[in-house]
Image (cartoon, rainbow, N blue to C red; front, side, top):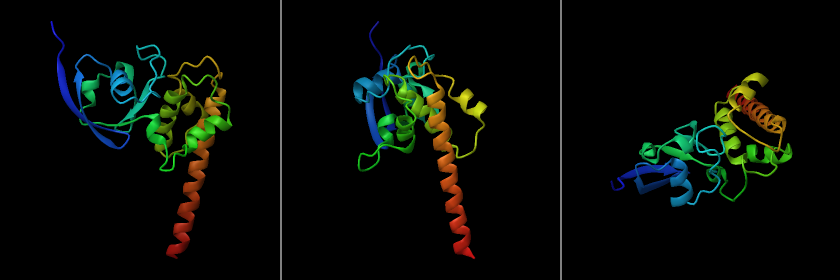
Length: 174
């Protein structure tokens, strides 16, 4: 039996894409092989390690168990999409560096994408909630505590900045 293909349209890191995909291919394969987005790592290929995590329509998914054809009409964000207009890294990426949450780096992109999903909610999570939400990652190097600290630090900084902005906005309205 021959391969079956389907034309899909999606947005990847803010860029509209159209591509013919093998209906059996994973989103990991599409992102790595067709779009050369190598931050998406091939780890376990069964949805257990989190190295392949990407954000699809605002929600984090293991791209290794997400078929590429399911990406039709979706908005996909990878680590490469976090880069600023001048090539600067995001605040969560900087926190991973500051907190030594990066060792060999293999799991880092997927962990950062899980953190992005959490941070985009814009709410204060307890330590336990952060640990539970980040628990889908396997890392042999950092011991997890550094990753936890990077996420918590960024969450608190963003919430503090938002409070300052809201305080400034309230004073301007008076």
